[in-house]
Length: 365
Ligand SMILES: *Cc1c(COP(=O)(O)O)cnc(C)c1O
Image 1 (tube, helix red, strand yellow):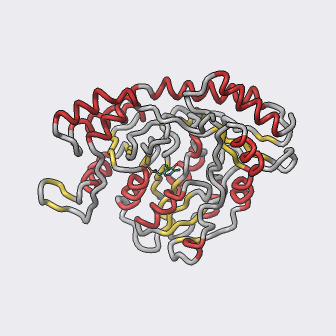
Image 2 (cartoon, helix red, strand yellow; image 1 turned 90 degrees about the vertical axis):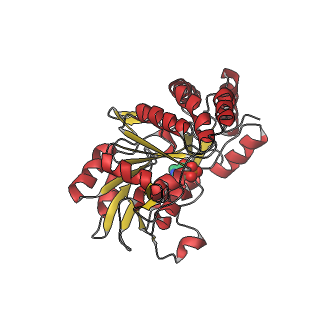
């Protein structure tokens, strides 16, 4: 079986052992070292490590001091953490439909969703490619809105030379299957000194110095043990990303001209870091998405459906006061057609040949 994802952290052993032997295992010098390295990679002044991508999003919204009823406009085609974080922070979620070209929020749809209660725009840089920041950033600026980027899947990606997480508050996930990992963990990036300072306080029980509380805070701290896992990941990020890019190129060459299959596009001005390689299985393909997925699994080619439904289209959100459902036809259709194929850096050439050959075989190409 060719897996859809492979976790490779074996090289973390020396640093992890160093932490274990030191006895400083919670947030300490290793977290600081990880944050400094992350800030450099992300091209920002500050990186604040937290214990998940979800808490990175929650803290980023909370630090903006929204009032009840204030709205965050985001993508309806995303992992549920995006929505849950908005609700956890006490804000209201409104949705702008995506573009089929990059699977990210469509700037025109965002513009139409902005209303009197809108306070935050939260694009999701899905699958490793950034949303159209050349239009979304000016929209935020012109309307006096904060920008929180859900960059959980886009570490190292860029738009017109600007890195993911450098436009506003950038939220990254270090979950096991993301492009870099600490098992669980997250990072917030910003160039704003004051927000960075407040986020550090918020992360640690709202505490400025011992027992000196400034705000009602949280325990969102990352541990030195986790940071030790992440440091070698950051060191090899460039190489791992290049391997993902080579794999994506090989998949796109091999899958060109398969009837009914729409391949992922790298749009102008963007570098794609290929967290996922996601095709659309259209109505003129030999089989539909679900059947292609089942056949690939049967034949030993791992694959994933990210995501099977519009994010708010579940009973638990139906009557939720913090969820403003809207018509999102592009997302609804893409959720029926999207299928992710293995693109991870551990694929061999023969793995890629097998992925390509099996997809072509099932689709009769
Ligand atoms: C993984 C992910 C998150 C949440 O990150 P965790 O570290 O799992 O909490 C948020 N948004 C998106 C788009 C993700 O893929």
